[in-house]
Length: 352
Image (cartoon, rainbow, N blue to C red; front, side, top):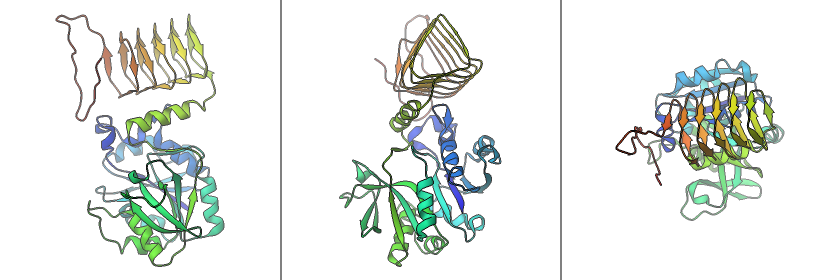
């Protein structure tokens, strides 16, 4: 069995961060989102993984390498344009050959991993198996309709959903999926949809089984979901101090990584602070992750993600925010007093 991880896509809902960075490499609890998926695949006793890459291929390759740090052998498969999930399967046939495989969307986070899901496929040997979760807003997802324990219909973002079971973004297939992806037509948005390919299998009487998860999962394509995933994962961490703490209070679950310093500050967990950071005269509140080489002085931050090489100084309070890499946020004494801002396309700033 092999793995196929989709790591293309432009991440438009996380701009401007994704103008300069792959959305799958934005860190949640100081670990790139993509790494959680690769670790989940490795724990499912799968060794060979193809990663479908697009415009950010060099960044993905640099971060993941040959896969050996995950116990995997990685093959990179280039997709010339984001032409749909089924298209990604289609172009991966030379890698997948006739092997069964799990397809995993690289910006998904699943609390309990996928080993149970993969083991069920190995045991039942259907032609396809789809991971589902009950959601309160099924009209925003691909939705599955079930009968007698099998999938009978799939609808993408239905106006009147017939169930509350959403496709999570992890799928199992045998070689018959290639018949499907080679026989469907592009959707109105010009993409080969994986829901259409699975519906083809259903219509042709192939065996498509559901697997409903009970733990949480997140599609981290939006800021709100990214912060929620960060909150949930931070709450699972164990406290660890590998840095230097001086005249400071560290409360709750706090992870302080190597060569970082905390001075005259209060850190209230769950919080993770990456390597080579400096926190001075500041408050870092619950559900915050600060990536490496970042400086925070005379500031307060809570329920936020701060990426690497950033500097925050003399800022009264930051909440519910995603701050990109190499960013400076500081209070200036220049006159006249004014907000002086340089931001990229598709940014959002809220000022009180």
